[in-house]
Length: 104
Image (cartoon, rainbow, N blue to C red):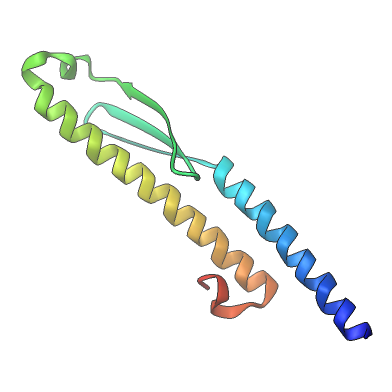
């Protein structure tokens, strides 16, 4: 019976660590800047900021370039956030000795 309670306790600790990790990942921010546009996203894949530092991009004649650059930068920032979250999961997996269970 003591073994069962120990396993339950370990499962609860793992659950708490996973929830803490999820909050950590969701709170982190990643940014990518290229072509006069800066994009900031969070680990939960939410765009938090978009800044146009190259005001010439706001010229209606350059709208296509602005849209392409914006989409490319958002996608790159989201990939950075996703990769950072996966790296954090791998680190936790190793820390907990779970091997490949969490992507590690």
